[in-house]
Length: 317
Image (cartoon, rainbow, N blue to C red):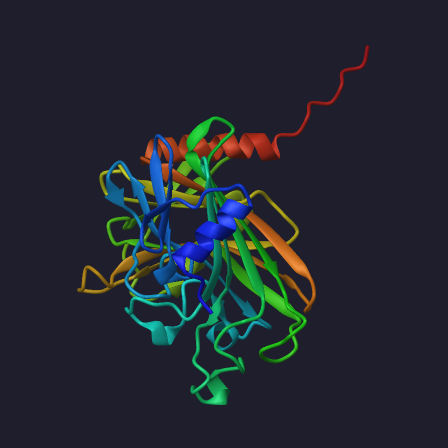
């Protein structure tokens, strides 16, 4: 059951937090650089990310947005909770995902939800593992604008708690996009940054197949090179950054080409992959960097220095 705006506000009041509704079922947090909006239409997923007046999120259907999605047991879309909703939700105004709560406090926005499975239960079983429309698992997401004095960095924290009550086969592993961004088609330039030395390498534009970009990224050590998507004039750019963790798997970017400007988009993902079991919780942190290309490069290098620098050995006296 999707909670109404009134229920969310009452929940926030009881918790001494304020859920800032921009309009019915829409919540926003802003700082001096960006504005981030989540909506009930998208199950609490980020439906808008605006930088200097420009929208960076493609909100075409319920499989895009800036959101969290995962697959169990490497089953891909066949066993695939998706924060914004299901395939059958299409371009509709409602999500099958169950949004439980939304809270906004200062520069932080929190959501809790039960994501819908991407595939409907009416899909033949050979293409679908889930036995329900919505997972019992709980997704708790926190978005914080600004990090250690840098307003261009958004801290994206996600925690998935696997329910003992299964809505499909036994779970043995998770491969999670935490998060993934389907951006507007304007972010058509793809680059790889070596944060250690600042070297930026352009990669092919408008790939006709989704795997071409991934092949390019696979040719480098994934955790050492950070993908950046930018506009041709370099005035708008987005990147994901994750410090090396046991469960971090790879970055991933690709294009969704189309003659339809609404449908076309570019995608960037931070993937985590690991064994998993019902009854356990798993947490992930990714930094989302927004600015012009020069700013994004600088912010990534600062993050790299903060989380990868090694202390100098003590000199002998």
